[in-house]
Image 1 (cartoon, rainbow, N blue to C red):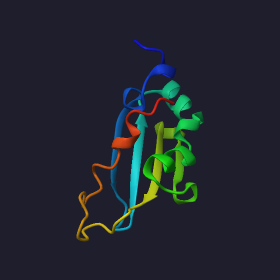
Image 2 (cartoon, rainbow, N blue to C red):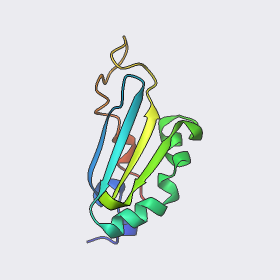
Image 3 (cartoon, helix red, strand yellow):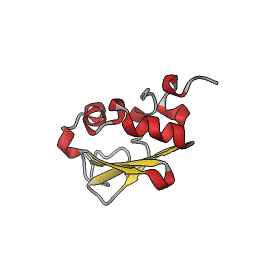
Image 4 (cartoon, rainbow, N blue to C red):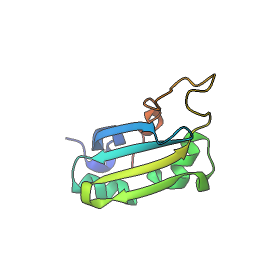
Length: 106
């Protein structure tokens, strides 16, 4: 097994998912596989609001990050770039928006 510090977020997490949080916001939930992976992810600059904002083409102040140590998870809240269900919305449920997070190496 690789050292946790060399693994991507996709390898460190049990689940990474995205979904709508109303028509104008998305949430991205990252459930880490164990306490060591959670600790690494929680302190990683690669998973800061600024870093996640850069991946999504947003300003840092537009991204909220919630550390949920009790369930070894990190939740991000981001604005949708288009209102859910509007013409041009390619992901009405927001379920495919976690992709840019998968290859991050914390």
